[in-house]
Image (tube, rainbow, N blue to C red; front, side, top):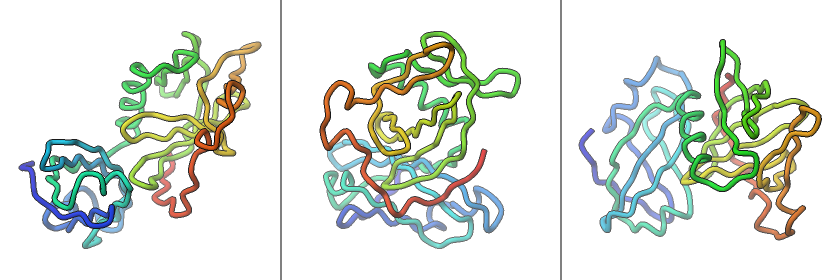
Length: 202
């Protein structure tokens, strides 16, 4: 698509669905996920995620990061975002981030696996949802559950919103490595997002 100029105010981006032909992305009433790439007039880029109900006239995306880009932005692209897209992007970011366990998600014979130090452990993705312009999923793996948050980077949390630095295997089962085991800081907790929305099962 050709870049389109839009206004952002107080960290909120409002997209008019007909202008971006969002209603062509699926049947009316379907809830989908969107990946939105915006750029400031100074060429600073930002990737945003949101859920959207086909047929709605507007979609609003709110994050403090938008306020840092200025009041006028260019929307570079708006695309439908799938579970497979999520897995691809998570793996790409994990490969560039230092996280214990050399983590990687992959499919084999229709099943999902989490690779921890090269060993594949059966996993299940509960569903995707969005909050504060990021996209989230909960991964069930062995007896452990991991919440994945992705925006410009990937972060992992346990279900109590404590930040993880990775995973390791013990007797073939994944063990969560929490950051407070190394250092305990308030910023190591995932912020609460009461407006979580758009849960779509796998």
